[in-house]
Amino acid sequence: MPGDVDDAVRALLLLMPRMVGRVKKIPVPEELRSFPLAPRHLSLLSNLLLDGPMAVNELAARLEVAPTTVSLLIGDLSRMGILERREDETDRRRRIIGIAAERLPAIRDWLAPGAAAWRKALAPLTPDQRRMFVDTLLAYEAAVSGEEQD
Image (tube, rainbow, N blue to C red; front, side, top):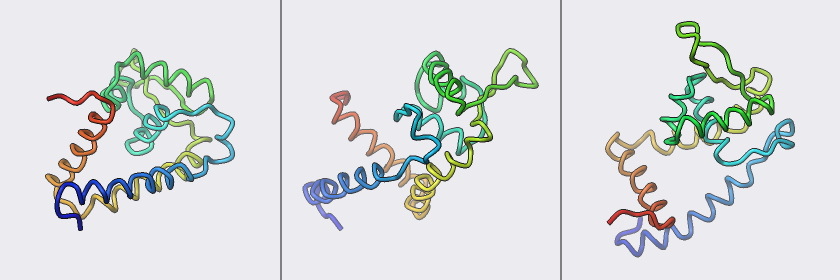
């Protein structure tokens, strides 16, 4: 186990490329290969897969983007036949977004193993340790992108 910061950095410099390489090798299901899916689409699909259908504003909050951005993504995926929109029975002005039933098995087979792997890795941690892990990854992302706050 890494002891000091440099030992941890060395361990992560070995680990991160392996993790990214393994994720990139996860095959896209045959029925989805023809679609121009980007990482932003996968985040949206993963949230719907984990938590089920939800409103645009809920998706926007989870993805930490504006509702208009989510609406554009939903439009893309709806035109591809990957998402379905339906009226909210309690408020007909709201639309509930879900994965199209015919696409759900392929998306589940593709994305659910990654969520299961995160659950397995995070389950032994306390809530505070999980928060620290996520915060550390967010800090790393910010530092790499040049967006870190001093």
